[in-house]
Length: 465
Image 1 (cartoon, rainbow, N blue to C red):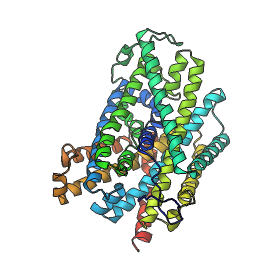
Image 2: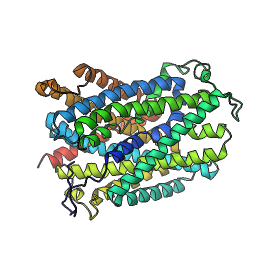
Image 3: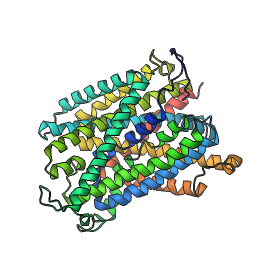
Image 4: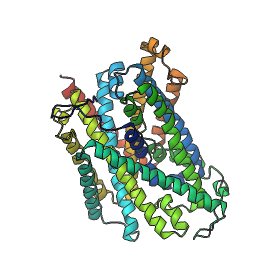
């Protein structure tokens, strides 16, 4: 997706560089620290117990290697602006087409998952009672129109709103960690009669209380927590000094996410034993409820609600830009490559909005918000894994066919091709794990439909050009 500097945007103009590095870094962190942590962690804890900590560390390491491969590829040729560019160059046009459209669908499914989370959090203000299917659909439609409206304003205003959204989210997690530490070190007794202590991590069946099956089952939502980190590499590659900014972004973002996730969950499970955590209640809101701080629980619920809106906002922004880029590469309808007077790809935005509205129907057919969330996140996880595998495949081709570029690289992937093979094998293993649970297996069964749709689009329309 190319971007240029223009003052008077026209329909056929280019996207403007209106986002500063400050915006990009916070948008990337905020997009990754969202629904997977605030809503998904309750279910993951109930499945895996304290072993969830090891799950996050393992996935964090694997995703870090994907990021290092992405970083080396982007720096090997500064004309590469995204993984669409290098996958097209190194593997072939079909790979760029596959990655672009799959990445678009990834963010659409995240948006649908976020709709489930929004309804789920609003139940807190409905005396904890679930909404009817019709109410769920109406809430989803209102959220979609609100997010679309935000995205139709100037990109700079969008960036500023997202910056503050992300900052509130990060501050909330830091406050939770500090309050939790205070509760642990003062021997605080919760409203449920539990004394906060680090010993809860191993005194209720050990670190692996649900055995290997529970440990493996925890990977689905945990890996969903990391989706979107590859966006950092792409955005950093478009800053003025990619040789400095890209390695910094790649090396710091996964570490920050592991810090936020692992430390926050250590606190949560130390305040409330893992087997007392309700999978249908956000453990973050529950921590303050256990402390008997009603006002803080309400504030935290508003924070996580705004966090999900922020994540959805970033997703809608990403989908419209991805469609714009595909259109300019003649891999999508020309209509999506048009800009409005504010330099926003409005047509692409409207199409993504229409698809999200279709996703709102999921709230009607699957009124159980946790079940709907699991279906959407599983599909998103499968698609993201496919995108990550294409990135690693591109690296293997680059290593073999461009040895001179690899030799002079100052930001090499540790372990080179061997690391790629290990990470690819890990991701294939995760896809197998998704077949073990009935709710994730359902999403796994429908995912090949997308590959068929892509094949029809590529061979029926794009290839003919």
